[in-house]
Image (tube, rainbow, N blue to C red; front, side, top):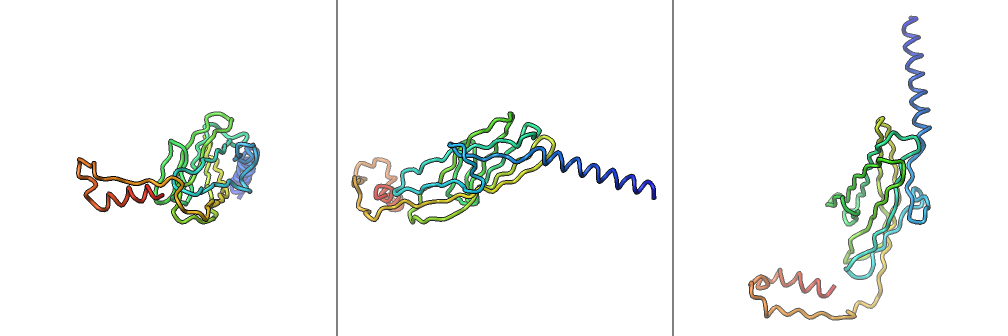
Length: 187
């Protein structure tokens, strides 16, 4: 009975110390280029009219104060059209970026979205997981607001005409190959 009480007191003391250590570590910081905390208000991505490129939005991630370095950071998003700066991965299940914070300073990353033919406003999120050298774990969800920017005038400013008559390879004899180039010229 006495040994069980000592074990219980030890476990309680261990849990209190672990909780205090995690609380002392605080929370990670996610900020935009202006230093604003975006963990609640989020980041806004613009899907501009046209199909050239959308702007990449810069943000920073800093480890929690007191975290045991290095801190591994995994940033993901469920939207397959989104992407991060390199090195990162992109695919049908959304982008993924892994970073290592070896110092207590913030590290920068960029996020953007590939253009869509059918523009629409929608909300999604960045999921950020951090784990430090003592196996402490933090998770954040940063809202992402995608804003479609589209004009009603869809007439081309600079019409492009495509001429396949000089194709010496025969590649553009295939209608599917020509259709891709013609669609790109229209876009």
